[in-house]
Image 1 (cartoon, protein in one colour):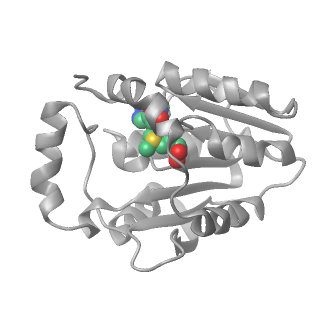
Image 2: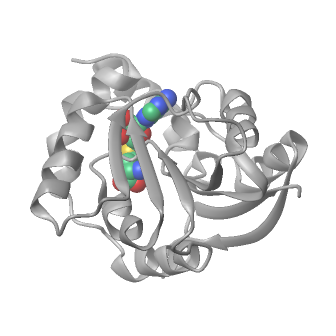
Length: 212
Ligand SMILES: C[S@@+](CC[C@H](N)C(=O)[O-])C[C@H]1O[C@@H](n2cnc3c(N)ncnc32)[C@H](O)[C@@H]1O
């Protein structure tokens, strides 16, 4: 059984990609929110893109959309899906680490991370990289499960699942704690909503702006 992050996600990739979106109304609402911040001139970086579900929907309306994931099998699936979709010259997938984009300073209008911040061992490093690559006034838009808001049993169950190889390493924090972390890093939170179309939902969508 895989024990660490990228091995886990490589192992999970085909199963993860085969899972349908569980709350299509909530997902569409979050996509609409992001699309409202994108335009034909937008340069976008998506980290932890998985099998490319979000990238394939958002990229056609952008100037460039660079999507990375550190699990090679996720990128293979994303590229297969892109090949089966209408051509999208702005979209490029690559194997890569979220916090090491390789992009030029101040070159990105919008950075997107869905369901990933809780998986990163070093969120401050990610926030620092986003502040480096975003243009002044650029946006970091994240959707994150806040595990500290789930049943307390999860704190007991998750380490066991992880030891058995059925869960990746994950951090526990609340939405308020995550927003405070992003403010402390130097972002202004300009929008905040719960992802799901039904309540309660522990997934928070944060739109964080780098100061202009
Ligand atoms: C829960 S999945 C989410 C995938 C996609 N964003 C979505 O919402 O469907 C988490 C993804 O983040 C990737 N990931 C985790 N840590 C990463 C890191 N440090 N750099 C790049 N990708 C990472 C995993 O490989 C996995 O594909």
